[in-house]
Image 1 (cartoon, rainbow, N blue to C red):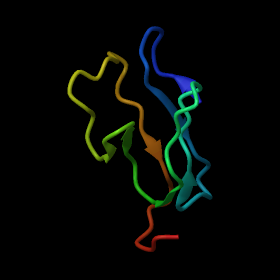
Image 2: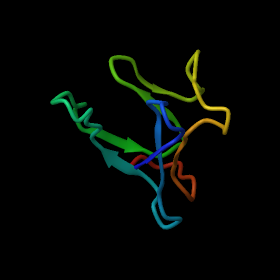
Image 3: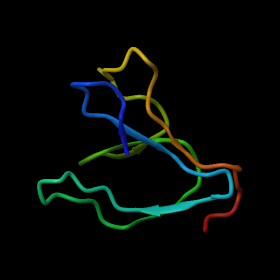
Image 4: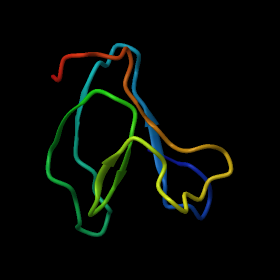
Length: 79
């Protein structure tokens, strides 16, 4: 994953166009990780302790635009 901006705790990854949906686990690097997050088929933000959000969280720190989990093409079917 790529850090969105130096000093900012947000990272982003854009999946290849052939990916419709993902299953993912986020790990903090300090032993904290999410459960298996299954079937995400939309752009979004993940916040530890809160979960998925479709909009940038309050206080988001990047002047370069928010990081998005990009899943293309969009799909109506959860994998």
